[in-house]
Length: 274
Image (cartoon, rainbow, N blue to C red; front, side, top):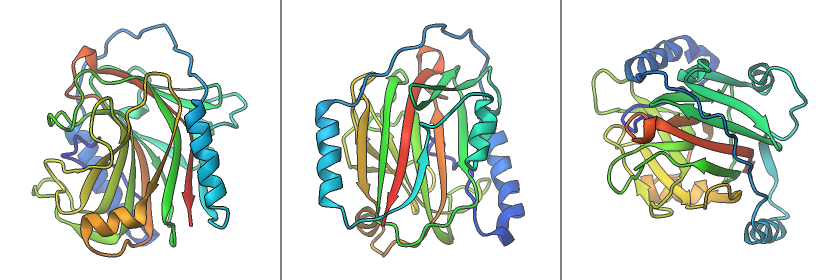
C-alpha cells in the first residue's frame, strides 16, 4: 500500500495529466527501496473458489439482476506472449518497482494474474484514463498465495500482498506532509491475514481522504469473491456523497515486513456495478 503514508499513481482528466504524472513519479522515487533477493522457484497452485464463495457469488448475482456491470477488468483471457504488453493492451501499466522483474514478477496462470514480490518493495499496476460515474459497488475475485510476514493494520505494519485503490473525483485533499502532493479521496481494499473486516483504517498520511479496508481473511490459495458497497462506505467514512470514480490502481507493498519482503497474490476479475 502506499506505505499508507504515500499514495499511488492515479489518472485524472487529460488536462491535468502532465503535472500529476510528475507528482506521482516523485512519490514513487521517494519511497521505493530494497535489495534484490533470490527468487523462490516453486509456484503454488491456486484452488478453485470455495463452495461458499461460489454460492455467495451466485446469490448476489441473483439478487442484483437489475444491477448492470459498468466496467470490467478481466485477467482470464490471456493467450500467450509478453504479459506486460498484454496488460498494456488492457490499459494497465507498470509503475514504480513493478517495472523491474528482479523486484516484482507478473505472470498469468489458471486464468489469473499473479503478482509476486522478491524483496521488500512497493510497486503499482495503474489503470489509465478512466472515469466511472454512477458506480455503486465493486466485486473482486482474488486470493493470496503468501501473506507478507507480520503485515497488520491493527499493529500499524501497513503492508499487503495486493490492494485495489479506488479514487473518487477531482478534488485534492491534503496529504499531511509538504513533500507529498495532495490527492483525491480514495478507498484501498485488501485481503488481510488477521485484520478486522470492513473497518476503515487510516494511514500515517492522507488521513482526511484515505481509508484502507480489509474485505476478507482467506486461507492461502483460497479464491474468494469480495463485494464492497462503495457508495455506502464513502458516505459513512466521509459524510458526503461519492463523486465519480476517477482512478484505479493495484498495489503491492512489502517494504516493512519480515521474511525478506516476499509475498504473492493473484486476481482474476474486477467488476464495477451500477
